[in-house]
Image 1: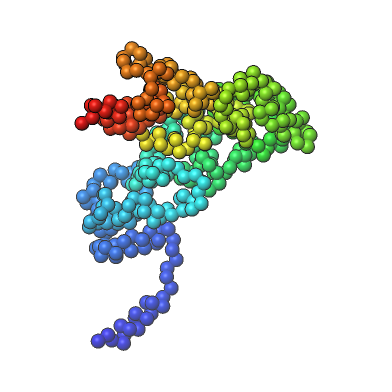
Image 2: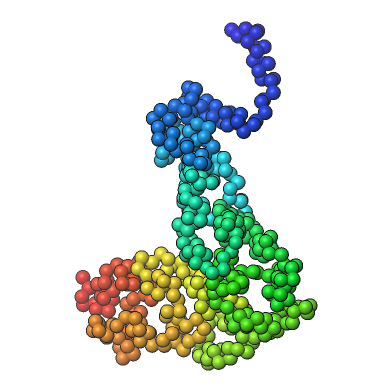
Length: 433
């Protein structure tokens, strides 16, 4: 039977106010709760772990130590007895991390960092301690270069460097986990991000931009935010009128009500300089749909500057993928890829503007088109060309695509069947087994 004194003591304990949660008491409370959950003796939630894991004495001397490690709360992440997860983690690594760091990636993120989404926190962070701030596995720039080597090498080699990248690093403009504000993990969308440093109201800014009011324009349509070999950090390939500071060739006069408006839409405006090219495109009997619809030339090309030849808005495969996403996805799954496809070079076989042959192939004769790279005449005796009819369909001629798929397949040599004989017996039925 419980005595009256015991009941009184319990009542007083329940009525007592909880202690204020300072960082130290919160850590102690967390450690205590983990110890209670596993019914551990004092110190066993972490301190006792060091009796076996003696190497942690050196780990904990690093400059930046993860809070649970510093507070000797190993049980905050690990199950001290057994687990279905590697390293006795109490849950999957991402779940363990989000127990404390739940808001790292915004719920409505417009862009999420691939390592966060695909590999988890440990792709960039050390779970215990590091010599680098934020417990990063490497210094920030070096870590980012693990995936973005081309960007960082280009920035290092650039004659004109972007100061925030040089002094602060990638984190000056990008959120390393996810962004609700913009694509490309930008903390704030352009141009708001840029005008934090570049004041658009100054006379020098106006002079550099030919007195056009560009404060609300997309800065990255002309400038490379990581660095450039061109003065003003312009992108490597600059449209001739921009390079010559002849903005009025396309735009209305600065200071007028619609100064940034173009004098005429594409392709009419483009024809002023590229008349011969446009005429040659339209003379062919098949014209690529983007040339004729929407923004025409501007569907694929930037009007001011670009990192790529032809002022393309992105890599060839990314530009083509805006319309041909299903084909790109199919190609990605192919085990055997045609070399131009693997390299993202759609224009290696197709004319991006127009053509006289089917599928806008650069060569109307498909056999001759393939022969530019594949010297089939030197190693094949198989009949090919307009003189030979495909026995499976009398309306078709024998050509490379009779047996191979131009983009790729799951099987060797771009074949649509797992074994070469499976392909051959479709025509040579007497050899079927």
